[in-house]
Length: 299
Image (tube, rainbow, N blue to C red):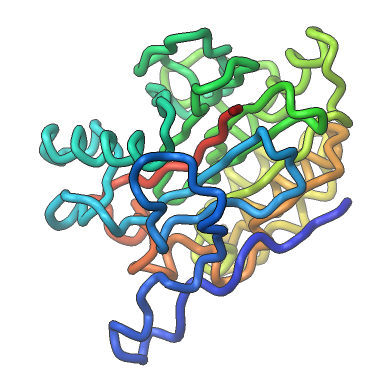
């Protein structure tokens, strides 16, 4: 497996002054800007060896209009924020990108949908893909893992929302039982369309880190059928409790499925949504929280 770092450190230890921890440490290239609005310095352009016609982004919690506790670039309509604030934030995103970001109704499942021209928001799914130009496959997160993919020839892009349920293929309460996790489901469907897993590369965005993601035995056991290496992603943390490495679990599953080019989140502290409160929203940390976004599109 090839794992490459995606950007510089997000922040500094919490004891430093607040202004010393502001989000200026994300790595991005201002020259890549394609929209009519300046690219915010605290948003990230993922670093991966995608062709020039593939563009990608990851927002932070800064730079928007939402008030506390959604301050300020909340892009989620379902979290209790004022709808007009979310609408203004989504408009800003579109102005920065210069293309339409298509938002899903994410349900912690494994369905991945194709985006047609003029894709509409709100389709129930946890991932999308497209070969059309000008539509950004987009996922919202606040501890779950945003996973972006593109083909090595730049013909297709995809974005997956990968929480532990989606990765392991465990349905949310009341949902139908999926056959496989969201990564395997997506790659199987693409293979049926003639695109082999080896033709994809992946970028993993910020998520809850391995020092913050405490889970019970049921979560750990969900990853073991067919994946003995998952044991490496769980560290004992008291009776019946474990610290889980969500990004490592995703890297393992991508590698097992045949995707060897994996970039971005290396499970270090700078990628942790819980541990970087000035950079990222976190449901686990704050309970009432906004959502940041990651996405990818073709030009």
